[in-house]
Image 1 (tube, rainbow, N blue to C red):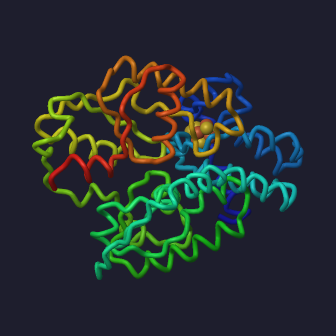
Image 2 (image 1 turned 180 degrees about the vertical axis):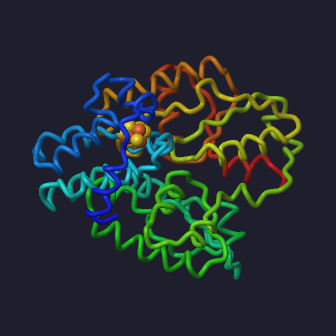
Length: 344
Ligand code: SF4
Ligand code: SF4
């Protein structure tokens, strides 16, 4: 999105406030300055030279990039991308961008280091369907059934950490590389909602390319719980990552509901964020913890035996809120559930 396009997007805001009620930061802080509508108004004030960069920067940094405002905006404003890009334009120096990026990817580096001996070779396939393996799975050296089914292409990071730390140069580099692979693939399967939603907003992809981006579960037509699964007759729920759209969530729910021998139960307030937001908790620990505690209450009410989700960052977030609330539940990646518990 170019500066001119951002200005035009901002103008589309009707101040209806439909985004406000869904913003998890507003729920905690109750401050209009931190709502998507408030941020849009402030950016508008900046464009008109009424507000300075300094008066906006702090509020922009509090955004969790959960995309709930974008999803609920009737004017279809890409609020999340605008906030991230404006944040990047306002970032003062390359050094602070680098430090921010380093802090964001540090947990991945640590994960990589501790899992270095787990590496296993994958089978080569000639499939035109590509598997977009996210950075967390790569750092965990996880070889999944998707590695063996689909082409293990050399995708870069989806580039969300670059975008949110203001490193537009590397964001564009990763975007260009991933775009080339997507254009040469017939389909691209994802196992992470944040990766898919980030890639879907690349301006280098046309509608045809975007239609190729799917969750691996969309290709599963029939599934059955394994005879020896320990989740037979257990209550299973699904945490909806903020980056997973409602339509896809309902498809996943249908698939889980179709499984015999498990009791699928929708999580109380399933739309609520886990609060983790990638590395958000490192920079805003109080807000992040408050959101996580709210999630923990919902989990307690639902009382499942197993919680599934489709984002590694949410998996960590849910483990974190189990830790906070002493309400330990088994948390599993949706992909791993299919690999270990399901006959496809
Ligand atoms: S992306 Fe989420 S946290 Fe950020 S302004 Fe929108 S609703 Fe609020
Ligand atoms: S929902 Fe969209 S149009 Fe309404 S106030 Fe929020 S950003 Fe503006």
